[in-house]
Length: 416
Image (cartoon, rainbow, N blue to C red; front, side):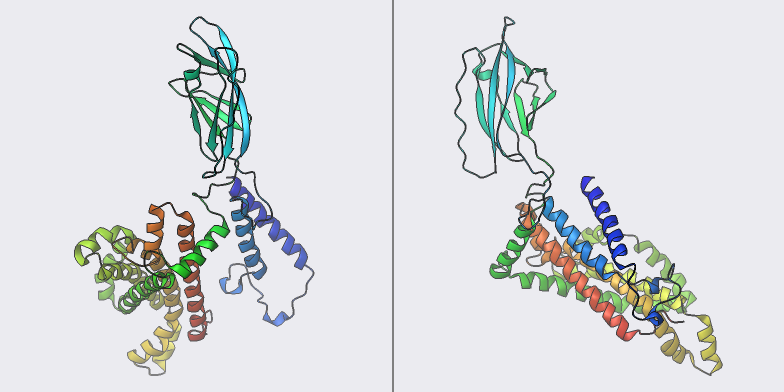
């Protein structure tokens, strides 16, 4: 919730600051501005300043909440250092005595010596120990104090099994057996195993790019994922686009295939994995088929929507000029349906990228998904995050290429 609140606050602050800085700047070309913008998607262009600030904000938040050396500011992190608290022990006769527990919180893996402390003069003996950052430690303090002794208070506050007392930079919870579980303050920063710092991810990228991972280079892992996605998407488009055209132009095709398409459309590709394994096995064929099914229904619906969205006046105009059905299909329907098809292709490609990780879960020896899953088994979060970032960057790059291709092949998009 804190992270979300910071993100929203930075978004609003950036929008206000950029708006204030540019409010007096005059546009260089008034003729290039549209007169209507609200509700007109074609009139909205991404604000480049907002895009840059968005990436910087995400990086700063990532660094701040992971203690990155690259971030200029950090949120409070986990406590490391020495601290202590007192507890009150009571023997079988009702007598009480105080003792102290001293502990040192250290980075996990660091070589640290336990503090040396005097035992104390009473029946309650002082205790000491080491605790790893983000970890907790159980102190069986009464084992040093003799038989029949139990802890009744911590820092002067009564305590019983299941209760917790806040002490300096830690919390102390009594277990059902009367021991004290000490959990040092963790702050707001995340442990590396949950979210590594940016420099750890970059170091993992450099290492895997040079040495490879699981007997394959990084280029081979990414290349095989890309090939699988492109092949599955290409087959899905080759089947789905003609199917969508047929459904948009023929009532019989629409009635025959519409129930199938509408039934399969909401079924997530991941749900089909067991069936694909049974039918096509666990090797490349099964992965390609799964990606094919991920793209098929999207492309069919996009092509059908493109045909249905063709302005009927254009069709009537072509008929009045003596055009045949083939000419209308070639010169009217196909050109006017291409914008919808390109939109569907971008969506289908994104779904395929999201599915390839699951497809590579099944007996894959190489691929970005395989790399992510193998790293997760060894809790190598930095490799997992690196793989996710690379998949996102490649998918984003493909989307940019598809936008450029759309602008080049369909320059009439948005025009009536």
